[in-house]
Image 1 (cartoon, rainbow, N blue to C red):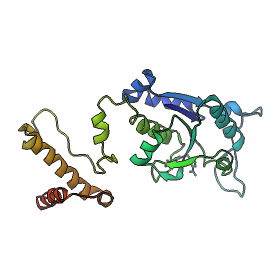
Image 2: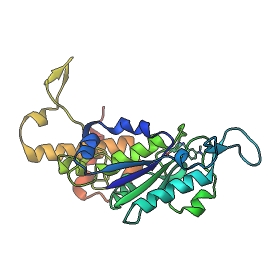
Image 3: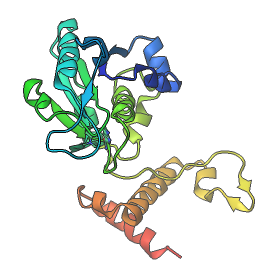
Image 4: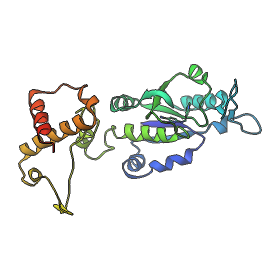
Length: 246
Ligand code: 4G0
């Protein structure tokens, strides 16, 4: 999958040259290509922003350099590309949207700076607007990296263990938060590993993990529980969990 990134700061994306995503790049399962709007300016100052019409603080990104950068990215791709604007005004990113994006061959991620982008750009270069959460960042780059990481993990071969992708927290596979994990040693400062995990009874372990996933989701993210259908067995497990809370 190819990620085309429209940014004034391509160097920021070295932050994802590590771990699983770094390896996916090395193995050419994904590629990142950068298009800097400053390279598409036509004035002597290489101006990419200007003050807002109507007054007010801050700067707004000019349409023309962004438009030219997006068009150059489109022309470099033989397959059609989906344009994604990273903005706090966008649709909230969730695992379902991540999986949808992972079905694209080419994405053009537009990472704006300043107070945002001239509204007319999205009319001239249509696409979807995505937000990674209800907060403001100094630029769309960090949001773009979040999208790249989450989407790349869904591609075949990127995460070594395909099962772990399906088990992830928030996966639309389970719709639940993940169960708790433990590793050695068995006791840390008096805190023990739940006995069921040491017994080797895999049916019991599966059952316990399901109960913990249901219980944590009930405690921390009741909104997620309303989106999924619980089986009779799930309801029993959740009731047991609730009864055993100190
Ligand atoms: C466009 C995304 C881009 C408009 C980008 C800001 C947060 C997110 C930017 C704005 C971003 C997010 C109107 C402030 C760059 N901040 N939550 N900053 N405005 O996904």
